[in-house]
Amino acid sequence: MVTGSEARVQVSGILAAVAREQLAVARAGIGTETTAPAAGQRVARTAVARPSEERVVDRAAVERAIGAIDRVAASVDDEIERLSVLRMKESLRLLAGPAPADATSGTVLGLAAWDGSLVFDETLVLAPLQEMYEHPGERVGDEVLRRYRFSLSEMFHQQSHLLSEAGTSYGDSAAAFADPAVRLLELGVSAAWTARHLDEYVETLGVPEIAPGIDQVELPDCYPSYLPAAVGLSEAVGERIGVPADEVLRRLNVVAPASKLPLATTLLLTASGLAQVVPPADRAAVQQQVSEQIRLPLLALATLRVDGTGERALQTTAAASGRAAVDAGVRTIEQIRRDRRN
Image 1 (tube, rainbow, N blue to C red):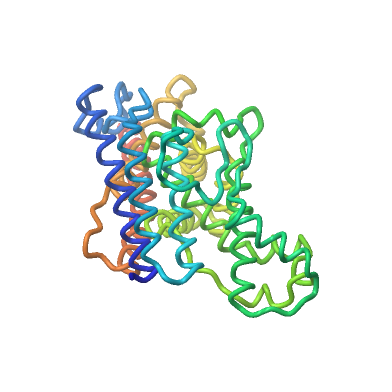
Image 2 (image 1 turned 60 degrees about the horizontal axis):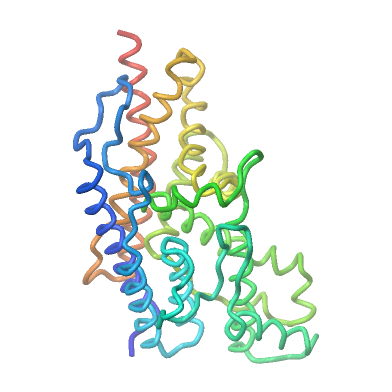
């Protein structure tokens, strides 16, 4: 048996291996620009091949990876720790599409499908909530409360995925989700928002009256690579634009997966004043150039080999990568500003 912490790191390695394989296939089939464009230049091609351009996904390989996550989860004794591992399957199920009829891997705990529907596992997510509502006000032990709380967190997490800004839909991001950096930011933001605002969600639903003590038990965080990166990025953006990190996280949480990186870019460009002085004809190219430089540290994290890494060390690295992404964007903005003055 392994601990939940060890298992989450193992699954982070599985997700990263899938991302590396995607990039290898993308580079072979699409070609890649290996040097970032000079500041001030228009970007004809991205610095690293994006799988989203042709949705490069080896579905058989992804199905095998999903099965590997099941096996890792099965080695975790604590139920809630095991569920925190299983939650991390969602990214690969969204990537691969619906499970084939002959798939041997188990179902995901919850899924915000690209058609806008929500799917939850009957036994692991819905049954605990049914039990909770059938015994309102009953005092139960902490382990039962943790099961109830996890089910609620899974619903909150999946509902967050469906949010999108006016004029777009969650499903519009299906192709972009093939980009590992887009996946990292989408899943990291949703996981961070869920972890930090679950008490408000539970309170709004009136659950503490139904399950007394549910607001006193804790759950483990999932996505040790993704969640801290999203928090680090939100903190760094907030410092640059003068708003609390949680407000940045909220703004990122309410836009579609494909819009999160462009939004972070827009926030930095607007606060810098560069967005107001760049001629309208050049703004799209500048936006893309800055966005790409923010993306690259996230992509490096999404493909990072984590063998032998502890969860705390991985979380620290991930948080630093989120901040590094913002720093890279800011450096690019300043270089563009200098080039335009010359």
